[in-house]
Length: 250
Image (spheres, rainbow, N blue to C red):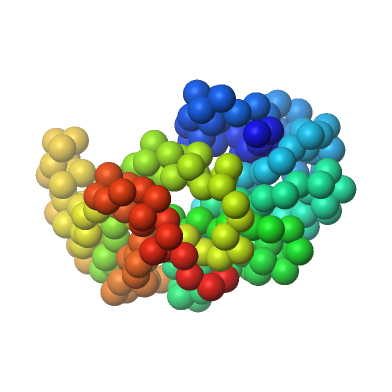
């Protein structure tokens, strides 16, 4: 199968490209560093030539919520037009658990992006992921002060990048689900407890302060809206069985 990975040189994208190539697929890594800009459309048509499927793991970062919304609206609209023209038969979107549940920041932008993909008439699978372990470090870093580290009281089930990419690599060649698949790690943590473990591992003994107003990817979150409800958990069960169980209506 010929597959174009949008954001193919990033954290998830580079792992996904490698795993798809190891499985024998033809892969194009589309990113600004490879001459493809999905906001302006530069290089996009060529990157999609012959593509049977696309996987969109692009990410503008977690800064200004309005900027995230603008990026996903513009890039997704441009990508869908190009995918229609190229005859793409499966659009896989890497999204986030919390889209549709959290009214703020990154999660509002991802919900909007999901809606565009679902309404596009291109067969699709939306993969909502729990926060990546690698991104949790950024949340902890953002909460650092001279005296303490402040994080919100949210429960999470972080997943490793390699595990998330492995699920994408398995789903993409399959028939489109036209539905949402949730993926999460096998263990649930209170973010303050996980932050304390991260700090201790780095020999940083500042106290962790639970802050109900703390920022999590541009949103204020408490409780468990970021935990998987019927999520595929790589390594904890047979993968194909979990995929079938994890499908929910888009």
